Image (cartoon, rainbow, N blue to C red; front, side, top):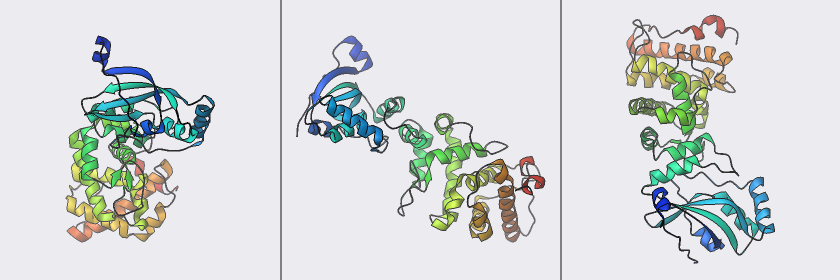
Length: 324
């Protein structure tokens, strides 16, 4: 396999920034020797723009456009930014190429992840979960959620018993929305919320997710329960009857009883049918909440022998629900 010796920082400026830049000759073997930092790097996508760049590389005699960023950590050479341009070079079928490189020397993988998050690819736009993947090394709440709830990942995939069924960005958007008096879509971006999230709040979210997973599981028939509308409204209730009472008249519910109510939600076929095609919108939010509240109330009465007085916010008034 071809090898490449990279220059180490020598000048005062280079030592301060831990950065060296150079123009080098590369071959496919050299490019393949640059490892992908799997912990935060986004998936590779071969799209039309990548193929267009491959044609440009071939026409320019193997010159790879832009500056590729490499990261050195513990003697390992990582491709921090430039994997799509590297793939474009492969598609160009050039035997030898030329590229401007920027080499950064890192002390930790977390530092490398921070640098990656700052860089913007010109070929494939970063998705919300690409930012989440990068943040997991520098944001303790995200790392803890990922460790404790492996069914929350960075891509919506339902291909196996261990695949993620819920994206991290969706999870954080729903949890943030549920903290508002009026839960609604939009608002703070997931990556912004992630950077301000407290560990205590992450622990509460983990507790809710564990209960939901026990109640709903991975069955395809329950997939709509994991969508934004139902997920946000159930989180909204959890905050107001488990974490802290909504009012002096609202009962404080145990986690075990809340889980039984979530079971009841999944067992209501009429509600499952209703959820299909519904969104966290003003039109669907009120009727969906009232259906959830009714299911909860019936189950709680069976378990406790008392009719509970659950939260009835102004946005979920009966007059609004009748319009849907």
